[in-house]
Image 1 (cartoon, helix red, strand yellow):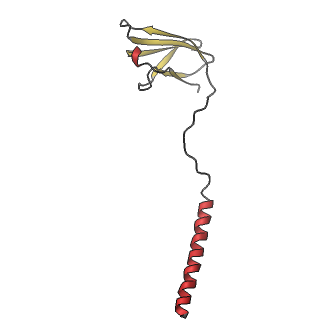
Image 2: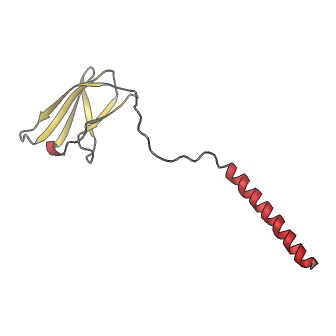
Length: 118
């Protein structure tokens, strides 16, 4: 009977220590965060956007636009599945982005401009 009581006491002590260790470790893990968010990003304002069609009017060959302040590197894309193309500064805050081979007008679903000021 004494050995059964010892086993029972050892089991309770081991369970208590295990629970305390688990509770302590759980409390130290910090805030768990996951997800995705979309918030406005301050930066440049784009204006005076114009499209330049290629000889084939189903394709956009280039776009031009103005930014409200200077930028060092600017890239743009017109199709969310497409890749970005580098733009060149033609004067002041005016930029031109050429799309080699053109972008099909029917596939255009966004105008995304990324500007970086080093």
